[in-house]
Length: 395
Image (tube, rainbow, N blue to C red; front, top):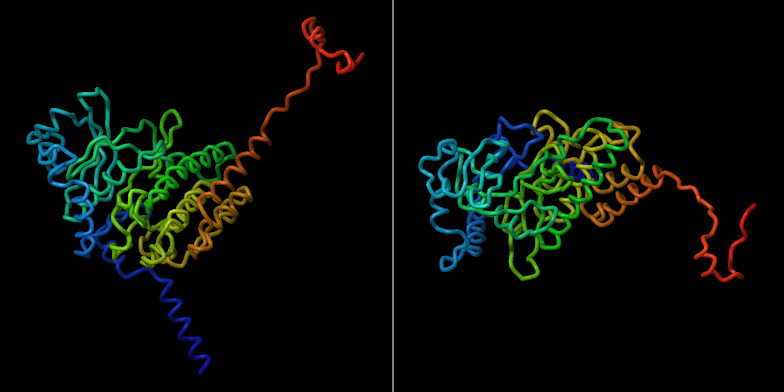
């Protein structure tokens, strides 16, 4: 009888370590996407769609719209963007210059803002649009605008199908990552992670989690500025200081199965909403450090579902096996942040403290020692010194 009970427990435990069945619906809608790309939610729940609509309506009351009505109605489907013949209001204010990036539900385009003579990035929905995706991009605009911070990309303008953001001249952190990085490169990558942590910690202080932290969503500018981008999966786990919810509410999101299979934490892979929280972002920050040291994502598999199987069990190859020369302090910080249980991961403050300690020791180790130079006292020095306290001069 005892053996039977133990067997039943093992079966239940094994089942809980499998990906949520809802992932199949998400994966089926993203067949062309790799395990390293973001997979977005589909129209599964009317409850979630209604919650998104409530968020948008609350931010845009009819008597005081945030965006000019002409701008809201001027934005056509992305297919007509190269010509934009039926886009007079947008053409008056912006001119499309080219494509920057294709994403899961949206494209990022390069445009010229005429009034301020500057280039901007315009995120627009792809051809396959739905009520949920339209509301998600609107919610992303509201979330990003609310999170004004030096390490979070600023939003300049928005409408139903697009948002206009700062154009970051540079590249993603992902383009800087290589396998077996030399110590100088690793030090620069850790500095980028620390800046990203500052942006994420600020969002947490406002009750919001990012939920899709990875190197490709961290932009590094030409002059070293670091910006966290792509807040399309952000959720509010608590109201902000003003008592309002500025992102889709976690407690009204029945399906948390979205994100990047190669780096989602176990609670996202298993669809365990009650375990999702600030520690979810911390696991992904640890995964980004893992990526920097090893050159690959924690759950690195070509097949999306296989990657999710690994993520559900938190089954990743220890980074020290992939990169034996990795600094022990960074390995330990990575291991703790990526613990399977959220309550075992510590805090972002503890994670960043470990990274800063390692950086500080590296700076000391690489510092050029300065010699003490003895010199003859000048006349003015001699006049101002107390003869009794004047140091003896070596012969």
